[in-house]
Amino acid sequence: GAVLWTQTNNLSNANGVIAYDSLNGNIVFIQYEGVIVSALDATTGAIRWQHTLTGWQSAESPTSIAVGDGHVYVPNVNGTLAALRADTGVLDWAVNVASDGGDLGPVATACGVLVVTGYSEGKVFGLNPATGATQWMVTTNTNWQAPAVDKDSCTAYFTTFDGAAAIAVLS
Image (cartoon, rainbow, N blue to C red; front, side, top):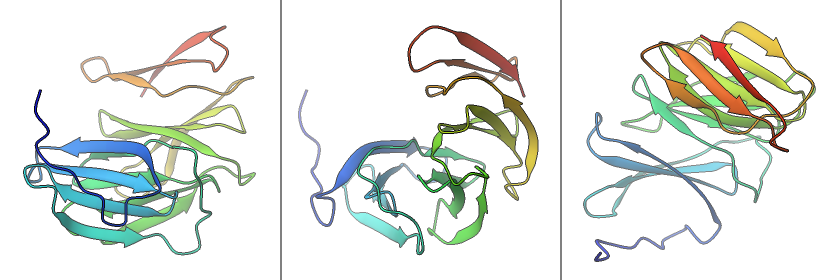
């Protein structure tokens, strides 16, 4: 139960969104203000890189970044999803997923598919992780919480914000 390190440099508005990647060198990723992503060394807390997503809408409410396939996948409240290289922070692609410009929700990776919820549209998207192209979409009547992914069966599980329903989607 000891503190290993703290990092406060430029993280004053961090909204609590963290992902961890042990495959690419023990990196902790933090998104803050909705537009800035930092990669921190998990051992020392030193900032490895920082990327500001230009043209994105700043947000204080957290979204949910995901790490997979050598990328950090970052959603924004304007309906855009970006893929940054996990080792360098270089932007590989950004696509507008939510056609109404609404919030994108949490992101997860499952069996070669990015699973993304669209808060304002009540949709679940399956995207190609290399390009961001939509592979499938499921329309629902409500907005969904963060997915839990079973990588063995390639299934993503969601619940509604109000807890009234659950859904399973095969990717």
